[in-house]
Amino acid sequence: MRPRTARANEHGGGPSQVELARHATIDVKMTSQVVRSLECKGLLTRESDPADARVRRLRPTDVGAALVRRAVVVVEQVDQDFFGENAGPAVPMLQRLLPEDDR
Image 1 (cartoon, one colour):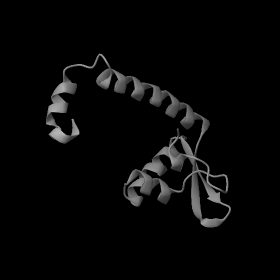
Image 2 (cartoon, rainbow, N blue to C red):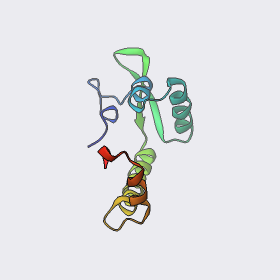
Image 3 (cartoon, rainbow, N blue to C red):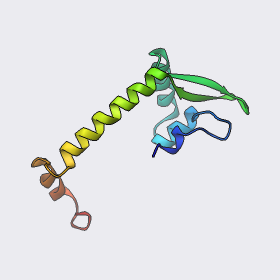
Image 4 (cartoon, rainbow, N blue to C red):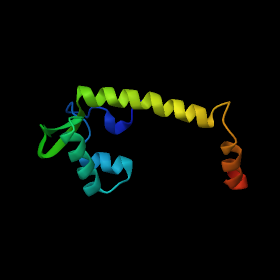
């Protein structure tokens, strides 16, 4: 399932920068800097919201969407390697660091 902020809103657009910042629990100014950088690299666009001209809706470009799909595959593989059935000795060590109730 895709994160809620990645889905189209009722107007057919992606999340706004403010919605993305809230979802990621990061500062709006930091989000703006990251979004600007991704836009300069051609990975996303900022489009006007038809319901509110002050709002810009974020949309991945085709290149950005392809990069996300490739990244998800890599992250899932790393997650499986680290936490899966054949996980290395780091997992038991990290589990010992958890409070007894969370093990």
